[in-house]
Amino acid sequence: MAASTLFKHVMFFFLFVLTTSHIAQASDPNILTDFIVPANSSTPIDGNFFTFIGMRGLAANSTNPTSFKVTKATMAEFPALNGQSVSMAVLQFPAGGVNPPHIHPRSAELLFVVEGSMEVGFVDTANKLYTQTLQIGDMFVFPKGLVHYQYNADASKQATAISAFGSANAGTVSAPVTLFATGIDDGILAESFKTDIATIQKIKADLELDRAMGVAGGALQIQVAGGMLVEADVVEGEAGSKIEEINSSHTWHVEIFATVRNPSIQTLQIGKMSVFPKVLVHYQYNADVTKKATVFSAFGNANAGTVSAPVTLFATGIDDGLHAKSFKTNVATIQKIKAGLAAKP
Image 1: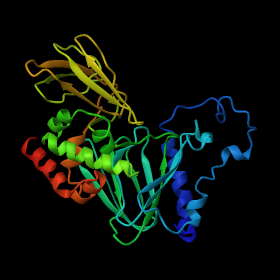
Image 2: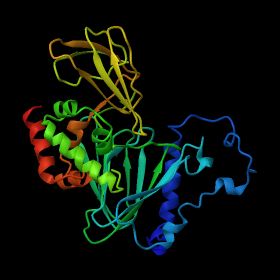
Image 3: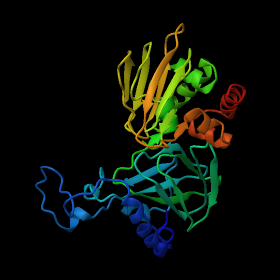
Image 4: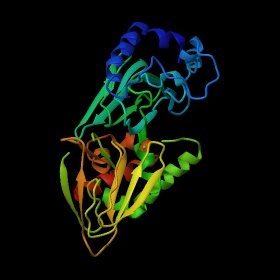
């Protein structure tokens, strides 16, 4: 990314950062001090603590990497952000590069294009797809907790964008990896996506091959806000609703996903309870093929919202080619899943 390209829109960028300050106030907890000093830190606190130099090389390099790359400035890379409710990232796209469908559990994202152009989109809880083609200087907001993507559709030119978040640790859950590379049972995925196990195994194998080559891709069901009490009657082989309190005649197989992609699995009996953290991907499965199960779910919001991964990803009109790139497979496999979902709503 050439220096002239990066700094050409400095005025717009300052406006961009100022705009995010309002978003930032709505996420991370307030602190009772001016800033947070890292525990056990022996380094004197001076201007260096509040300075991040990890992006200097981006301005001097006129060529983006050959695969999509994110350079972050979150509290992990820049400890001074802890408690400040703000973070940023630079997104570098090669020609034809894609940032696969994903969510940020703890923040909205404000994207600012500084080089090239890109196709962006997100899907709301009513399964409506919102898309836009962005040019240099354009901005686009992705609401917190909703599945979204960015795609450089230009086959000959690179693209670069800057993202700001209203959290020092917005988190990322990438749909391809979360669904197909964290150990969810093939049969559960096949039932959920209305396809066969062979198709699920092909996607898993394609992703594993790509990851083995050093390219990382993150959703099944996402609770968008965190009470309504609901009853879910779950029949053989079907994924049910989210569970917080369980009154079941049977065993449940429950999995909770964290943004670090470590699954937490639990089998639940009558009277047991399980909590699904807000916005993280999760599912439920009645593994008994002879008896039904019934559960009660409570939510800390009168309209919690639900984003179902099969529908959001494959039944809202997201481009087949973009999906093929995101899931590291071919268009035919994507079309097979779409056809299965269309035939078995």
